[in-house]
Length: 96
Image (tube, rainbow, N blue to C red; front, side, top):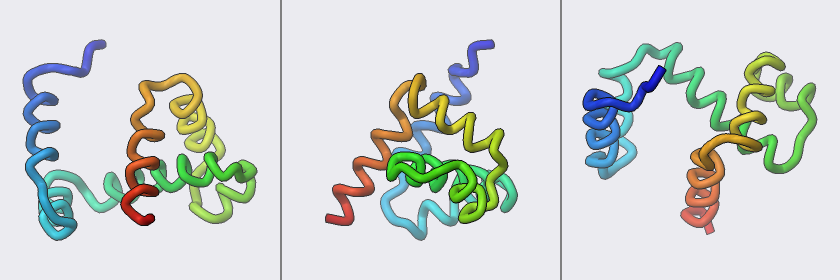
């Protein structure tokens, strides 16, 4: 199933218009449930911890993520499009 279409293009374009953390919070709160946002945040943290590297049990303990979620994120890191790595690298650069 091809998930990229005019609607997802519009969503990506909308995300790119956000300028501040507060704008991002406002948009995310309106567009997604708290559980959906927590799940996305958890996956990003799992990706960050996998890059350290940290063991699956420690990641599960620290984040509350299931081993299935950790494995899925690991698969994306190893074989995905590079989205996690790109974002994590830019976040590191922003902190430095």
